[in-house]
Amino acid sequence: MTFWQTQKHAEDYENSSTFQELLDQAKPYLSDSSEWKIQLSEDMEINYLKDIEIPAAKKYVIDVQKEEAKKIEVNNNKMFVRIVSIKVQGNKMDEFKKIYAETIIPAFRETKGCRYAFLTHSINNNEDFLSITIWDCKEDASNFETSGSYMTLINKVKHTFSQFYLWKMSLEKQYNSQVKTSDDLTVGNYDVVTGRNFL
Image (tube, rainbow, N blue to C red):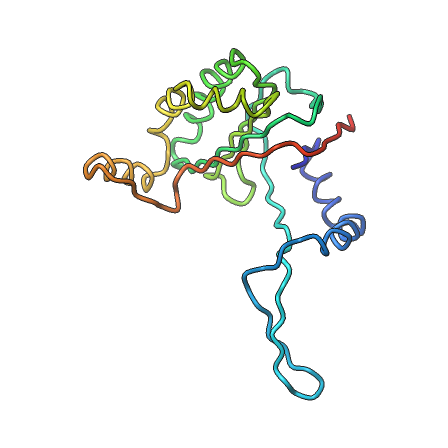
């Protein structure tokens, strides 16, 4: 994950030879793709080759952030990143951003161990949002989630989530069983391996 001053800076880097060189260096360490590549050899025999899973660059714009998050500093190797992926109704995006800025950010500001918080939306699909929080350690993030604070904040904004997700929620309530959809809220948890601030 990288944070850039402008979208153009990020795209210039992605189109540069430096990015391609670094990707080439990383290829031997990347996992094999679940897909296979079929090709003909010189003697016209069919060969099946495993393909490499090339990292996909996803681009998001920061909409809201904690005021203190002007400059990111990685203080230790115990820091922890939590990414919540959300799909929001197109006509409720402004309301969602407002609630995030006025309710969720202040809650993160008061939460032990939450160092940075960002709300971002996808450049390719405005209805796709990521809530990114960076924590002093995994324990602080886990305490936040298990304390009930996470669900309290979700309940304040869930009416803005996609209609498909809201339908799934009503089904779960009606039938008292879990339903999986492509619009589900997903939570990704990551240990910070290394990091550097260049500002």
